[in-house]
Length: 349
Ligand code: UT7
Image (cartoon, rainbow, N blue to C red; front, side, top):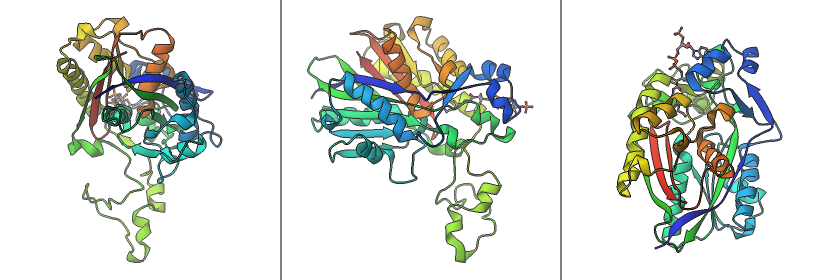
């Protein structure tokens, strides 16, 4: 059995920079509030019509594939993580396969929100280990700016999120003790509604036991997506931020320690922790809890906000480009988010 290694990495963020002050034209908020609570100074928004979750993924993937010394036709499997797909279905994986003129390879979409990239990496890792595939493209991409509530009502969610994409190419490595050492995946669906976007969906209020208003048997499609949902702003993500925060600061250190213990290591052995960029305060809390130095943790949420499934590959790519990830380094990726789901991956670069 081979370990898998990251053979190429790439990222893409849209050109348009949106500062905290730019958001004042839509909602009551302030640069001070956003920076103090989240650390975010600005984020990027995709072009409304010319960029999609998939087109951004294409840009990041081109770089990752080129850095791996490959052509798009060499890729033999795609794992695509996103919560903001171009279409409700089919998934972005097939759109990426088409856009990059790849062969008729398998394309799998992963729906694990903030943990999506680590889940996707773990899936790809298993396929490499079993020898089924040799060049897997793993992508995280999000176009959040298209689906947020920009009124004051939605400000606790909308100020946090940004757009962008990151991608890696996974390949087998013959060197023992190198590459992805282990991955650890978790979920707890008890709190599924705490950070969720319900509509469009097939739930019919089943899980929340709320009455289904004005349901007309003749218009069953209305249950999936209706004017009322739009009128009541039930088509946006909703989040109990404090509940997410409290759980995140417990589960992040837990899943990082789990990966270290599984490999006989301690926090002192980490050369670089790349946490999902959810909130700078969460990352700082995790750093403190694990007693990590500043140079052991990489954050770039200040520039890009929270890009969900894209945040880890974007941060990892920037860290790598800045020379902060070197041959032989122990790199830990860790994520927590909607579901709840959380995950980690420990890599010997
Ligand atoms: O990656 C996905 C996973 N998500 C997360 O990890 C998010 C985790 N949670 C958080 O990052 C934080 O909870 C938030 C940044 C979302 C919110 O910070 P908070 O310190 O928990 O604020 P809060 O929701 O408790 O709200 C405090 C106050 C409220 O006003 P009142 O009721 O005290 O008068 C909010 O209405 O701040 C108000 N508020 C805002 N004010 C200005 C909420 N959003 C904003 C805003 N600008 N954007």
